[in-house]
Length: 482
Image (cartoon, rainbow, N blue to C red):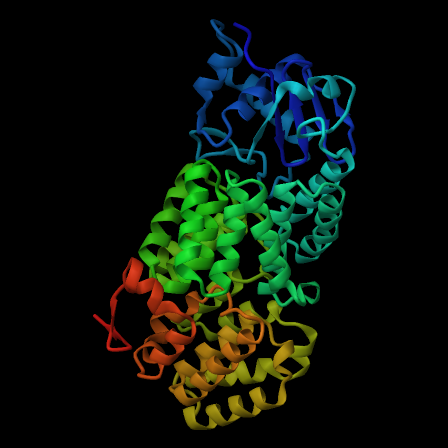
């Protein structure tokens, strides 16, 4: 019986085993592959997500032959170059701690009806009825989204929008444009204005078009978490993980947008350790794991994850890496380093608004070298004069922490409620609230006023269904530490 013809799509490329053609899905260009290079790439793609030992690869590519390991290394190097892989971040073929290799991208398996178009150089990635230009726009957008540069994420949005205009049935485009909007919203990027309602509609459309697609459930889970619909979000993420157990995005987004915010830190740590052990050097995973470990008080593990992310080329200007490095420095009483870590993340507006001197005074007060009362007045004055809409979420989290660390809980709750008021006007509760569970935030969490904050964020609903935050109980509308 003849095997069903399958075509593989992954991160801007299309691989046809029958015709032995590799195409760029962005511009339709055919990429040259030697026969053994094609065999190696096909084996990687067919085993995407799996740890492949060098022995396994040698046996598969040179069956029954004695071949030096260097031959395999040469083919891996050639494939990385062909795919345009950056040395600082292995997006395609990744070394796994001297154990072997792993093919990282999520691979889509497409029906064989498309083989005729592959032979002619077409990049139609779905059924023949699919719109070729729409798919090319989608692939161009995905290429931009899979970077660490917010400006590139912003460029992806009009390309995703064009893709769904040309092909309203392209479910993945709806899912990923929703996620792009949410990522930019988290950074308060100008292109994210009115992003939430659009993202919600797009995420729902993705699930409606393809209920069995994990990407739609990830997008809907993320928008539900952002909206405080925590139970629905949990179910969305769990569905995504069941639909595609090998895809890294469902567990990583589950941790980043839900588990950290609701205080289920141990679940987030276990997920991060599992992903890093199995997938190794992905910058985003190392960065997120550093934040999870910091929040849970595992400083040594957080520091190791930071070093891993930096070694892979992570950007210090994007939260949360700089926040983690700054907090680790503060815990070690290295306040100059703590200040230096945060300065690159600040906009020109914040620098000109005198943020750095205020931050230095706050850290001096934490160190016992400045008056907490005078520092609180200086911080109040600075908060009163800045345009709150120009203070990004990451900085608002820092200010909340500063107030708490100098013992100014009135200021901390005023700032928190001001943030929640702002979010409420958008119909959300905000994103990535892991900062609430830092050890340094204990006075804030255990204050009776936190009960109202938790209710405004709809957190008790989740705790009633899935258990309270680690190390706490929810009792009588108050959070109590164990």
